[in-house]
Length: 240
Image (cartoon, rainbow, N blue to C red; front, side):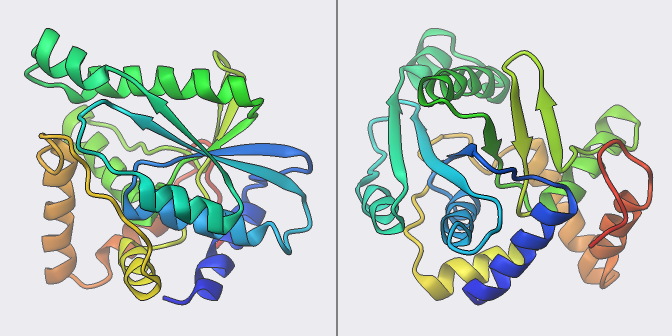
């Protein structure tokens, strides 16, 4: 996928859900993965022509695995003219060594969000952009159906009253395959996650399940996404 195609889909999502306003300072949490780097690239380039002016800051929460090299991402952010903040933490040591969590994802996510919120407050951020794409929307809906017994997924825009921040998700019109194609075509410097439980979660199970369903029933994931938009779920419309 070309940059212009990515920008077109990101802009449409931002317009459909009023994600960006004049004067916003938006943080992008950079994990080093393909999704967050695609989002950062799109928002950085969109600054040049989007009618509402905004600032960007990229933030990485370093969990402390000691094998995460962020040099290429640092250079990448410099090329994009985006401020890059790396927050050093001991989260890995606490979760895996001190607490020895059998199911570490929940605690890790909570601590990571806490560190990210502190960093955003220090930078005067009022919005954070999450790199959830269309597949994530559908995956989350399926997880809710399977494990909670309800039809639910996250909204394109969410207000977090505890932190007085808005969460925006500008990639919701991109398929994961679009992101993979964009990253490969443009040599985006993806950094592999050092987490020992990466790719071994319930979400990965659901992703694999949906891939099988879509293979046997082509277009089923798109139809599920359309059903979400048409379902009157909080925050969703049938635009796009």
